[in-house]
Length: 238
Image (cartoon, rainbow, N blue to C red; front, side):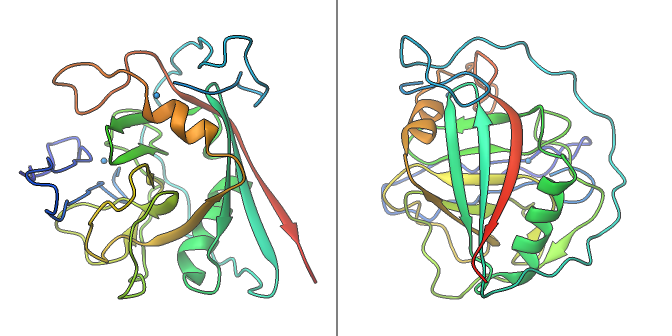
């Protein structure tokens, strides 16, 4: 069942009650929003010798963020790819600029500010999603602003889809900084979570994080930290 946000505005994830049941994913947006190892790499994105996540120290949680809302606009004629370098491998995300101009502009804005550097994937929900982008590191944080952009009504959250988390009470398409990557064929979520884009290239980093063991009764928190050491944005096209 879906729980209400705690005093720290903890991001919450509903439990799967049946294979065909729609799941609710939540994150406490602007006040905070609401978490890995088979493949690959050190925090620079290089492959580890064992082909698994490398050990990293858990970063110090950040306090409340008060970043001004962006006024950035991305050119829909160009291609934007965000690369997350993690201790479990590299993840590349092609931004869905045409379908979600406001959400992708906000995501790119945070990447360019270095906001995601040294944050974690704080939740791993088996056969569902991996979730990160919280400065507090526990599902309670956000950038200090909220963007609202309802996703396409026919959006399906299939493997590799990247979308933004929101609270149960937030409107459709609300987002702060927390995002999730779908790790199952179809997450069966309603079209309420703002679209960011899709994983491109290798799935190894996603697969590695998705297999990370978690702390029992800790909302999917990985036993070992899964760190985004650096997020970068590449732009191509005319």
